[in-house]
Image (cartoon, rainbow, N blue to C red; front, side, top):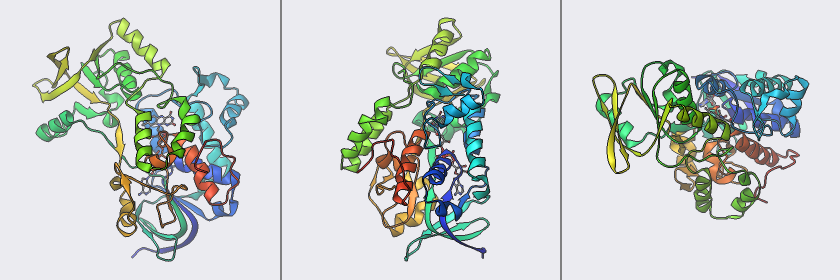
Length: 406
Ligand SMILES: Cc1cc2nc3c(=O)[nH]c(=O)nc-3n(C[C@H](O)[C@H](O)[C@H](O)COP(=O)(O)OP(=O)(O)OC[C@H]3O[C@@H](n4cnc5c(N)ncnc54)[C@H](O)[C@@H]3O)c2cc1C
């Protein structure tokens, strides 16, 4: 039987950028006393997944702009850059911060607000909404009760197309046919590679292989779209207002999904790829995959291109087709789902305006909050929108920067 660890005002599950944004907003806007009885549960240190993502894809700068960071003051990061004499670490027309500068700024927030001390190294294994209000959390180191909880666990899974799933079913998860989530720099230097997908992750993997001297084929279904953010900028202002004026949550999910659309690539990475294509280091092919087969030397991808099927032999086939969120992927919501069932659209729960699961004090940040936060819900922008909403509902004096429900 696990030890009873006591009562909290707030339990946060996950120590990623969403959780950091929430707690920075709470520290700035209050109520401060809530922060004094908060614990953050994660077996990994703060932002471990974030740092791992940037390191494994060797990403030098964020996609998002200088105003998108965990502090409510949009000028916080640029001021920090100036104070540090690092103005030259903002890039391109939207001032994308360098990976290092953003990480250092997050460290400053974690230290400045004393947030590191709030983390308990434990996995939450069960979450039970209590009949009299509040929640009980079972963790690998003990049981806690909290007046409210926030899940910031990013429950997404790779979107695996049928041709890749089929190859795995037939040949097992053999090396060489992978989703981009499993790609690492070790894959470089192993021979010809085919990268499938029209988004930024595909672009980063294509460039990494090409710069390492591997023969690269980049396969996209349609023309590649150039865009700074993964949504149009109007989605941070006017469109977000329209989104919230739509009452039907199903219609909102459709709107938000359409806004995110397929993949897109920022100008900087787009130009880099164009250069690699022009100099013959990358072959760009538009077509659809017909099937993937194992061969003696590696893999053969059959691609439908201009009415014909073209075989593409490769040592590695990398499928950068994104990820999907579903309420079932978050096992901590099992009791909420069964004991307090709510309407779902495309696997997403229909939450209250303050992102709480109806009839509970469990709030969700990140991908499952799409219908309330909008198409940027997975990113730091979405974290800011969500933090405004949640902290305000707890009585925080928030200066809203993003349109939201009245
Ligand atoms: C390559 C890449 C680049 C990106 N670049 C940007 C960018 O430039 N700008 C931007 O805004 N967004 C970007 N994103 C999107 C997004 O901001 C990141 O994926 C971000 O890490 C998501 O933050 P999060 O807090 O939701 O989740 P995570 O960073 O995944 O953190 C979730 C945490 O929850 C913990 N956890 C899960 N379950 C439990 C449990 N049961 N108990 C305890 N702990 C648990 C995990 O250990 C993890 O540490 C990028 C994403 C990727 C993949």
